[in-house]
Image (cartoon, rainbow, N blue to C red; front, side, top):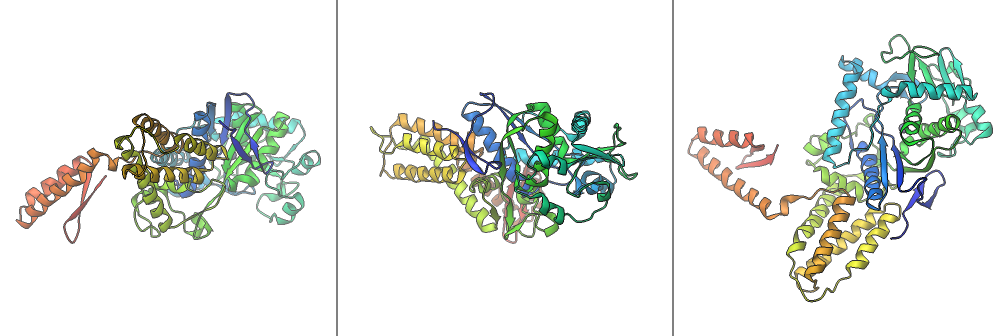
Length: 488
Ligand code: ZN
């Protein structure tokens, strides 16, 4: 098998993946800040790094995948100003901050399960790692790259820049940052506006607070990822991932902190997924286009023409390369829905294909093309194009225009399922299996009986049918003409 190539955001080029301690791979991905329900923007990094996790394991690596949950320290403004996002939500909902964290972590996990995202190996929370973060602050202070100001501790970016390259990941230039940073609350504590908080002294209204040598306060947002990646993956590890929106300041700050605290560059490969746009604009609540995953699955958002299955969302995201932008539209999602159904139908058809004495299609070449696509920085659109090609071949076999041996059918089934299910993480849609084709027919019959009962004014029977179906998870919806049904 050819080598796995990844695009390293840090070096801005594709590199052959060589882990530090093969066959072990350390993978750290910035997870969600849990102060609201998960939206489409959460799905893309989750799916991108789930694919990476699956593929690395598939090609034989033992991966420790750490994806954190930010539950403290993420302020409303990236320049260390404003309220804590979780605390602000807690105030709004009149609950404990940790109730906010629990509720939205649960929602996030539920949505991730629906999208068939594998659970990370470790999912640490920032609030559970305050001592580790404090130790790191003490180290950075003792190295002379941070200063205490009014009970808060700030990283000294200017001093760091003398001996290190601040901005090497994001390509930002310090002078530009200086002029671009607006005057914000609390900025007067900093020597320079681009310095960032390692520890913030808590204002009286700030409810999440811990003792420290510097003040009663809380850690700066960027610090948790440096502290937790070091704790679980070591001072040097293989891959750090996240959305492109985290390049600056979050990941740039992580690099600087870890470099000083650990005395070395911590990350070998930086990988970033691009953003999802809606009508060309970045998705976000401020634009009023933040569509929640729950809304996609139920169709309850003004921009949505209908509900979309989690697998449609997953397939839609995988149809673009993770470093490309992806623009949302109903048309695009419906095209994905059809494409996904077509693939699944081929997989269902495969075992029942007519067999012959010889195989006229080249399964070996096809399979190696599929691997080549994955090895080229996880090129899923090309992989999916190969799957569609094979889909066409399968139809040609069914039509008798190509042929396959029974041995090769087994091989093809195994390979096709491996790419679609094990690696792309799609879940088999069983609507095409013979058993499930029965259900719509049976339902049609039952609803016809109910319709007749209503016509005969036997409402007891029609209600009984609806209630009994409800008990087994089928919801009947009366329409102007007849009725529809769906699974709860
Ligand atoms: Zn992070």
